[in-house]
Amino acid sequence: MRAPRGVLAMDARATMSSRGATLAYTVPRVRIDAMSAKEFADTFLTRGAPVILIDTERRVVPTWTARELAAKYGNVLVPLDGGERRVALEAFVQSFANEDKGGAGASTRDGYARNLHASEYFPEEARALRLPDALGENKLRDPSATPGVNERWRDWFEVFICARNDSRARFPFVHRDTCGVHAASYQIEGSKQFTL
Image 1 (cartoon, rainbow, N blue to C red):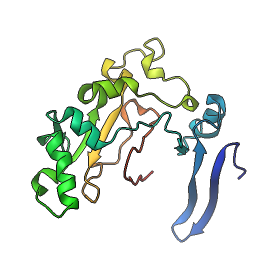
Image 2 (image 1 turned 90 degrees about the horizontal axis):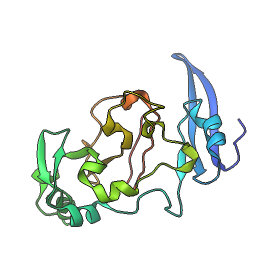
Image 3 (image 1 turned 180 degrees about the horizontal axis):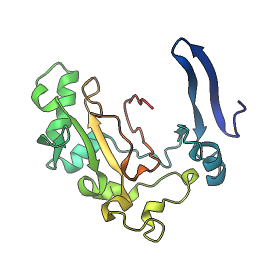
Image 4 (image 1 turned 45 degrees about the vertical axis):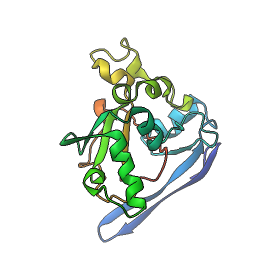
C-alpha cells in the first residue's frame, strides 16, 4: 500500500490463520496540516480508516492539563463512573498527586471522570475547541445539513480524566459514537489505548 502525501507510516497486510483472514493494520501517523480536507476524506473518512494526526505545534490539540482545569474549576462536581458518584474536580485531581507520593486519596481517586461535556463543565476552554481543518466542515453545527439533531450535540466535545495507572478507567462498553459520526480524540496528556 502506498502512503499518501504527509503520511509518516502506513502498513496493511492480510494474514491467514485457522480462524480465517485477519488484517494487520498499523494506524498511520499524519501531520495535522499535511492534507487538505478532500485528500483526508478520500484517504481516511470514506474508508472509515483510523488515523493518528500529529499536532507538533499544538495548534489544534488543547494545551491545558487536568491540574490547570482543577485550579480553575476546582469546586465543580464531576461525575465518576458515568454518574454513580460526584466529587469536586480539585479533590479528584489532587488525589493523583497523592498517589504519586504514596499518600492517601484512594477513595476519591478510584473512578473515571468520563463524558464530561466541555461546554457544561469547562465553558471557557470549550469555546476554543475545534476540529482540525483536515476533517472538513463539522456538519453537526449546521442545522440545515443535520436537521433534528439535539442542540447539545452541535458542539459536542467531551473530556475524560483518570488517574495515570488506573486500569479500571476504561469505557464500559464497545460503542458507536452518538449519531454514528466520525470521532476525533485529542490526547492532551498521558496515554490511552483504543480497540477498533
